[in-house]
Amino acid sequence: MGTVTRTVCFTDLANYTAKVSRSDREGLRKILEEHEQLVRPIVQQYNGRIVKNLGDSFLILFQAATDALRAALDIQHEVHARGSTSIRLAMTTGDVEEIEGDAFGEAVNLAARILAKAPSEEIWFGPGTRVCMNAAEIPWEEVGRFSMKGIPGEKQVFRAVPKHKCWLPEPVKLAAKNRNLVRLRRGARPPLLPPDPILLFEGFAPGSAALAEAVESLPVLNPASMWLVGYNVASEDRKEWTESGRGLVIGTPEAVNAAIEDAQKVQTRTSGSDTIVLDVGLNPDLELVMCGLALPAVPLSDVVASYFYEMLPDGRWVNKSDRSVIRVEVTPEGVWIQALVTGVSIDGRPLSSGDRTLVKASVAISTSTVGLRFQEVGAPYAGLLLADTEMRLGVMEGHTATLGREPAHPGLAYPDRRGQDNIRWCSGPRAARARAGGFTLDRALAGRHQASIALNGNDIVVRQIHERCPTYLFRGENVPMTKLSVKDQTVNASIGELIFAGTTVVGLRAPE
Image (tube, rainbow, N blue to C red; front, side, top):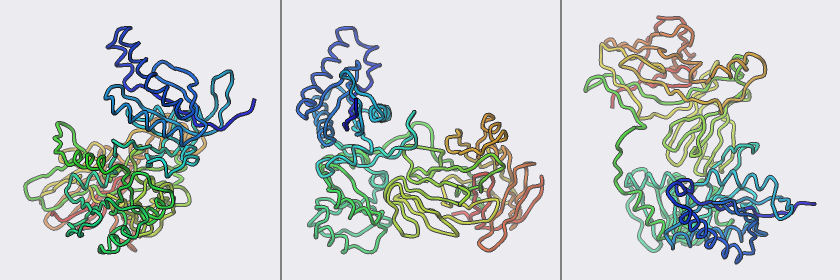
């Protein structure tokens, strides 16, 4: 029997396991009946076929991708109106083999994996559905790229947006919190712009003359600061607006208003912090600032053939995350930057989501929330990615601070990113032993106690502590790096210079 092209959709009751634990048999039967009574008539309305009931989940086949998405949106609208059952949906389009009423194939497997990633009350779909659907009928946006168990490579995933929902992109959400979001409405006079504004164009038809006039009336701004509110946006209008690096906020006016109001609510944090600020004394004479990612060149010691890191919207580097905005990959050819979302540019040249480009020498890289710089420094490093963070340590004259993965007090701790998913290994026994032994770049190339920095009068003295892992001092372009590889070896440094070891860069800064 041959295969047919179908859109495979899964529905799933959110928090089903928790509901089961709190319900008797009669309550459980009512939950499942409510799910079926909600889903079945809408599926039939859009010519879908429920293949099977998996308890808390339905496997459904649709002949048309657009019909599948419209059915999913109607289901979420009905769920919202009832205010009861919480459902997630996931789908993809591809070849399906139907045998004795059941469905099999890679499309079924991929839809199930996407469902496992999808949060409650959302509709996620794969690239096959994105290609086959009528984009002008479906309000949609990108979610990100995901690795999924049993599925080779990474898959780009998208989300359909119900009328009552709007997921603000991170730059817009941060601007709403920080009060530098400027809402430009059609027919209103342009307001005075604050420093570093994020502009939200509301009430404009995509591709319209009014929108073009509004953009042209503004001063020259980074395209990544401009966001257009729309709901159903045709493919050509979407491309015309985003190809220069501008962004879209998908949502109805009511949903966008609600999302902005929610973002502006004051949130109190009870525990934990993403930022560490340590000061020795009230008025430090020197600041050590965590300011970047150092990129060792590959191949590395017959162990690492290539590797990557990903950057979150707030500028932190991680091995891998579903929220990442860019990926840096180091290969024998050099350093590659890949945009994982829209709003990324290199030296002012916008990159589309998924675009990958080789960077050399010194280039500026910007996202919607962070600006950074790539700097070549010479072997054994492929380069540095530089952007100051709020993780810093103040040092008083006459004091000494330490650096490392577990530095003595007072000290600045290097990130220790666990996991090996970002490494492609060399062949051979040495790489196999390193992998089995838990090798990571962060742990293998920098020590728990790496180096110390003492401020003696006007002298900044860097001393090597670790016996094997070297520390490097970068003084600027066209100046050879200084390498500290012998224990207790010292070198004098200056304000503005960079110290790095392993994958961590620390900048020497005058106190603000």
